[in-house]
Figure 1 (cartoon, rainbow, N blue to C red):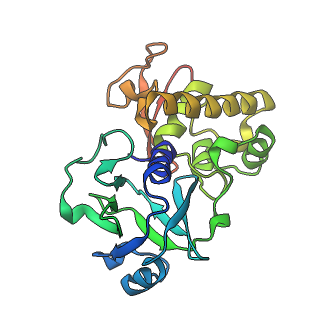
Figure 2 (figure 1 turned 30 degrees about the vertical axis):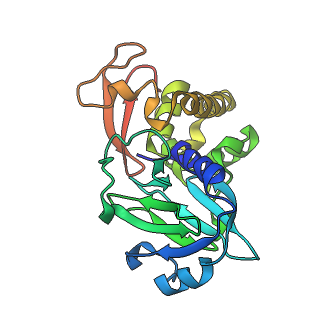
Length: 262
C-alpha cells in the first residue's frame, strides 16, 4: 500500500513529466473524492488554463504548485492510489490492490493542452484531492526527522511508540509498513509506551528510521522491508527464528518479533 516512499515516486513522476504543460480540462467524476469543500466546478475554475510549476511532498501528501498565483493541488494516494502521467504509473506495482487500469478507478485527472494526461487512479477510493491544504497540520517530514525532535515527541506521550511514530501531526510520512520495519530494525516492541524509551533507545530508533527510509527507497518501496517475509500468521522472525507476534497496535495490524523486540 502506498506510503511516503510511493508518494515520493509519484511526486518525482509529476516533477519530471507534468510540469509547464497548460491544463486544458479537469476530470472530476467523483465529487466525494474532493475534500474540504472542493467541488467539481471549483476545481475546474481553479485549475483550467494554469500550469503545474513545482511538485513537492510532505509526508504522504503530494503538493503541486500552480502558475499565476493559483492554488496548491494536494493529492493523497490513500491505501491504493497511484499517479499516472501519459499512461505511465509511479512506483512499484501494488501488492494489495489490482493494477488493472479500469476507467472507473480514475478518480481525478487533468488533460493538458498537448493531449497528455495526469490521473489519480484509486481502486479502493481511500485517497483524496484538495486545494490549498493546511500544510502545517502535518509534522516534519520523516526524511527530515532529527534525534532531538524525536526524543521530545516520544517523551511527551504514554501512547504506544508505534502510534506516536504514525501520528501524522507529529511525524509526517511513516505508515504501517515503514513503522513496523523501523521498530524491527531497532529491536523495540511497538506496544511499549513511547516515554519508556531511554536516550540510547531513542538514538537507536532514530538511526533505524533513517536507515529504513534510505534502504527501502533504494530497494523500490515500503513493501521491501526485511520483516515483510514474516507478515503472516505462524511466521518466524527472519533475524533470530523466534515466533512473530501479530497484534493490533495503534489501531493497525502489527507484526513484531517476540524475542529481539523488547
